[in-house]
Length: 177
Image (cartoon, rainbow, N blue to C red; front, side, top):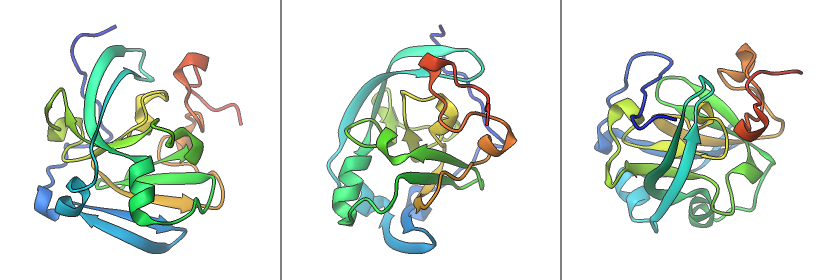
């Protein structure tokens, strides 16, 4: 358990101005919607309190996030679920795969606030994916897109041996493909 909030990233911290940020929703290679910062923040906001777990063996309890649930994003986009898999893309060319079922029914959000303050760049601001019931590498920092894919495509860490799903309760750290 930690009371702090360790900062772990693939590379240097990205500093993205809100006016330069956008979230792209893609079905395979086709962009079906792009939200600007202003458009995104006009969507209904949700507060989420959740425990988070890092693959490096720390956990932080009762973290407080605010943002837009994936359910709300899907409603705003106005498409039926086009596939069972999603690749989350980040501004630093990072990606991670997440089964769509792990993102809906209030289980995932694109967060813009942590602990009732705008999300700091070191923690993925201005916006990051939050999927608290999976290891935190699935909660991509500096998120720029959600892409529906036909198959479960590995992201950055998954292609380097991390588990395709990453359930901390099952200790799914590394792949046994």
